Length: 431
Image (cartoon, rainbow, N blue to C red; front, top):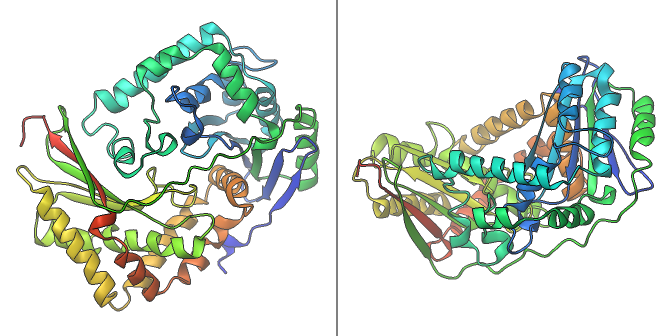
C-alpha cells in the first residue's frame, strides 16, 4: 500500500450524538476542520426550493456568541481560510488553519452549531445574495444550470430528486425566519452532524478540545432520513429548451445506476465506465466524437449530478454530455454514443485499457486527499453516509478489483429505453 494511504483514524461519539473523526498527520503545521450536516438539496421542503443553500448562507451571519462577520475575522486573523457548500445530500462548513489555531476553529464551529443569528435583516440580505448567485451562475451565463439543474426533472419525477436546487425567486422571497428556525431545529442537530479534524494534531489533546467546545451543545437526535427512492424509467425521455445565451448546441444524457451506498460493488463499475468512455484524449467517446467523426467539440462523463461519485446517495445517475459544432446534430451524436457503449458491452475493453483507466483514477483520488482540508471533508462525509471515514484511502484498491466483465455488464444497461436526455437549443446566434 502506498505510504500516502497509511493513515490513522480515531473515531468517537459525544454524549449529544456528534460523531467525531480525527486524522493525525504531523507532516505540516496545518489542520483542516470540517463539520458536515446530513441535510442537502433533497431535504428541503416543498415550496421552499433553494432553502438548503439559503440556510448555508445564514450560518455565516453570526452565531450564538459572535456577531456578524466575527467568524470571518477570527479565521482570517489566524492565517486561515474557510467556506461552506451545499450538496444534494449534505451541507459542509470548513476551515484550514495553522495547527496552533485548532481550538479557535472548534470554538467557531461549536458556536454556530448552538445556533446561528436568524434575524429578518440577515434573512432578507442573504435571500438577495442567493438571488444574485442565480443571476450570475444560471440566468446570465451560457449553459447556466446545464446539466445539473436541467436534467434531473427529465430523469426523475419526485420533488426531492427533480426540483431546482438553486431555488425560484418566489420561493426564496417567501422564506421566513420561522422557516429558518424550524429548519435549524430539525436538521442542524449534533446528532445529525459529523466533525472531522485532519492534520497536525495530537489525538488526545484534540479529543479534549472537541469535548470542551462541543460537549455542551444541546443534544437533539437526527431526524428520520427521508426515502428518496423512485422507480427507474422504462422508456426514453427527452426534452429541449432554448438557451438565449448559448452559442452552440449541447446535450446531456443520464442513466440510473445502482445504489452507491447499499450496492457499492455493483456501483463501482459505472464509475470506471464513465472514465473509460470520456476521460482523456484516448477515451472511447473523445476519440470517436471529437477526433475522428468531429461531430462534437467536447464530451464528458461522470457519475452523480454534481460529479461527486463517492459523496452521494441513491438515486443517482451516470451522465454523458457533449457540446456540438454549429449546425451539429444531437441525434447523430446520440447514435454514435449508443454504438460505442454497445461496443464496450459486446467486445469488451482493449488490452491495458482497464488498468490505465484505474491507475489514472487512483492518481486523481490520491491527489484529492493530499490536503488536510480535503481529507477532513472526505472523512466527515464518508463517516456520515457510510460509517467508513477511511473510504477515500481504500478507493484505489477497491477500484482495482473492478473487472472487465463488470464494466461490460454496466455498459449493457445503458440502453435507449433507460435514457433521459436534455438538449440545449442555442439562442446565441451561432446555429
